[in-house]
Length: 234
Image 1: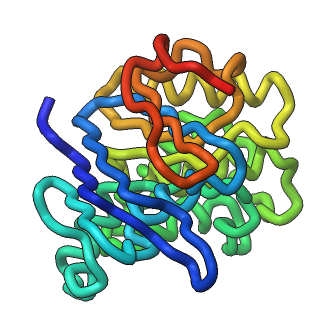
Image 2: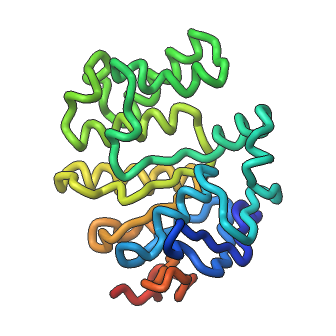
């Protein structure tokens, strides 16, 4: 497995506080990684940097050896390729869903990438089937349950067939049945070669999903990187 993500001496500061300090990290192709830490430790900030949503205050973030900056993401060709490669499932599905129907929600990404209409239709059908939400095809996302919204949000991300799937607290607010479905889904995606990065505090619900753990402290620093089974959870 090659290096996929490299983070070197990275820090991020909001206007009046640190969010991440001196982060060094390597994630390999096919990894399944849990990002763990108390509220305010910088988990969501780290995921946003990995997805190119925000740029670090200092240090470097490299994806497949290319430094990801505001400048590199201004290049339309590179930006398109990068955002197709990494899919981000937000903690709050309502911030991710904005189309008038589930079909249009899932079709949005492939359409933006210039896929032919028949290919978009096939991609949407495949995603609906994979997430077991074919019955929601014509529904309005806003009116769905939290579990249904989460599945639609995930479907809209995997419609681009990214090589990396990033989840921010994906099990929050879900019923046990949907939690089990998403756990099994993450394991299935990892088994077919997808790299999984997931911020979570649901340790019991995610047993068996992750091989690596990254633990962030209240001081916004990494205090552990290694085998998930050897991590000590507070």
